[in-house]
Length: 455
Ligand SMILES: [Zn+2]
Image (cartoon, rainbow, N blue to C red):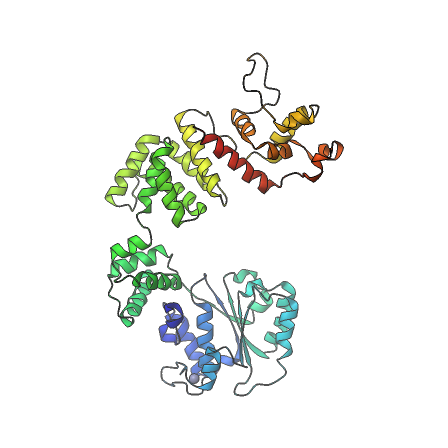
C-alpha cells in the first residue's frame, strides 16, 4: 500500500508546509516544544495528524539530527510512536471518543510520570467533536501545562475559546497542485513506474487535491502498467462527460440512452450519476450561451447539440437532478423518464416525484372506506371518466396510473389509513400495517416503473 509506505515520516517529506515546519523546528531547536500546546487546523487530507506525529517524534527522539532537526525514526522513542506503543505519545480520535469518560480516563494517567519525557503528549484528532463537557476536562491540564496537547481539527471555531487561547494555532494549508504532482512523481520514480506528468496531473485534478486518495488511485492504475493519459482516462472514467451529455441529449427518447445509463450505473452510484447528469446539463447551457468551459473539442460539440435540443430547459434538467437527495436507481430512472415526458410536452409540468404517503392514500381511502372488503382488494381507479363529472379524488393522471398499477396487496395497505385499520379491522387485516415512508417510496417507484415499461 503506497499510501502507508509513503506517509511522510520526516518534516522534509511533508508537502507544502514549509513555513509551519520552520516554526516547529525552531521550537525543537530551542527545546521549548514541550512548553506549550498546539492546535493544527485545516481541511481534511492536509496532513494535520501526520504533522502531529512527526512533531512528537522530533520532540522525543533519542538521536535527533541536530542540524536537520528531523527525527531518526529508528530509536526506541521513534519506533514506539510508529508502532503505536508509546507510553508518552497518545493519539485519540475525538470523533469516536468524544465523551467525558474517555477524556477523564486520559487525564487520570497524567500524575504518573513517564520515562524519557518531561510530560505526556496527547494528540486529539477531530478535536471539535469533543463534547463541551469533555473540552472542559481537557482544559485544566492544558492550562496547568501538565501535558502537551496537539489538537487537530477541521473546525477550529467549534473549540472553546478558553482552550484555543492556551494553544499555539497553526493553519495547515493544502498543498498546491504542483507540489502534489511533484510528490506523486517522486513516488512513481521510487516504485520504478514510468509516467507522463500530465497524466499524474489528471489524477490530482480528479481527486480534489486529496493527496492520499491520489496516491491510492495511482497505485491501482500502475498495476496495469505505465501512467499515461490514456490509462488514467480509462481508469477514472474521464470519458464519462460525453456519456452524461449523450443521456441529456436523448432524454426524450429513453431507448437511446438506457444502455449508456446502465454502463454508468455499473461504475457509479445513482447519486453520482444524478450529479454527473446535472453537471452535464448545466455545462451544455453554459456552452450554448458561449461561456468558456474546459471541455475537449468533441465534448464541446456534443454540449452544443444538447443546448440546441433543449435550450433553456437544460436548466430545468440540471435543477431537477441536482435536487434529488440520495436517489435510488429507480428514482433516478423515473426522474429521467418524467423529464423526457415533460420536454416532449406530454406533461405540462413535472409532477411531484414521490407523493407523500397520506395525500393520495387518504384521499382515495376516504371514499373507499364505505366500499366492501372485496372492493378494496382491487382498487380500480375509474379509467373512463365522465368528462362532466369532476374527478372526486383530484388525482393527477400520474396518480391514477400509479394506483391502478400497484400490487393489490400493497395498495390495500396504502389505501387504509391508520384510523381505518383500527376501526375496521377484519380478520384478514390484522397482520397489515401502514407502510413506512421508505417502503411506500420503494413500492411507488416499482409500480411506476412497471407502468412506464408496459409495452
Ligand atoms: Zn528517534
